[in-house]
Image (cartoon, rainbow, N blue to C red; front, side):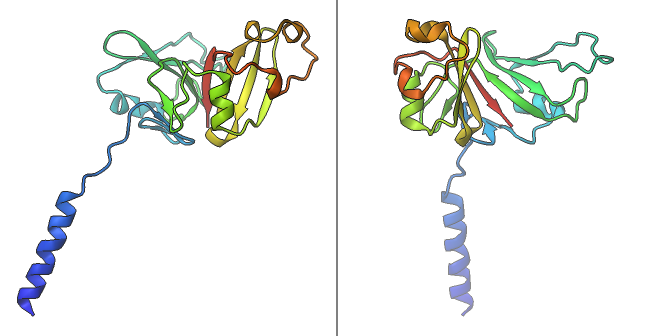
Length: 185
């Protein structure tokens, strides 16, 4: 009995030792995370999440107006990765409410990035809504809490100048390029 218990313990240790813990991809976008950033990440935790990257907190003296100050993240080469918007200005315990994805290495589990087109979005996600702005349209995808902005110059001429026109997904060319990619929590 004692021998079988030792054997069982050794087998369990071998199994635990051989299984590798899956490491979080720092550029993977999910519904509630972007790399190591989550929907509950506080501003004070950014130094731990981006230890070798530069974190730029723009403080514009808005403590009286209540405006939100964006936080920019740059990699070691100086390339901008993300722009983070916290829920509260000048509050280290505030959580991040939106992320503007700048770097094309950030991708969803279905390989959609800033380098993707409308066709990539349409073929991989259910479009939740399309909003018309002055110079662009915004494609909402609730499945990943994201919005993709496409410049109206990418649309047919008949859709570019009428703000009241309701644009449908079938009217947007598949090769229309993404201008901005945002994730909201």
